[in-house]
Length: 79
Image (tube, rainbow, N blue to C red; front, top):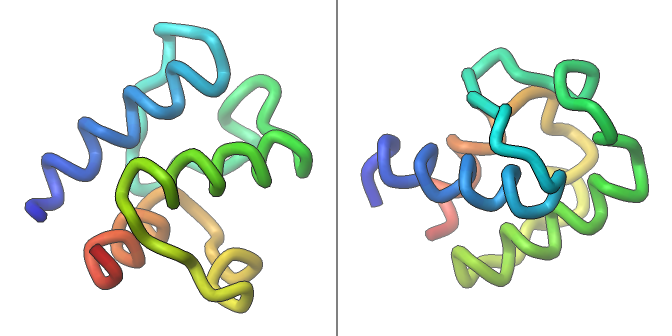
């Protein structure tokens, strides 16, 4: 899957999970950049991403990701 496709799909997921159309993801986007992205929403977000992409993140990768760019790279690797 192309990086652009992953980003487009992720933006739709983020908009749905955080119930806003005001999200524009960049590689450098972190939880601090998105209103409501706390630890509980992170678990929800990861679950939705895994379902939508048909993947399963290893726990070490979930806790090790620092920004959306790393998330995209891991999705590209696993999908």
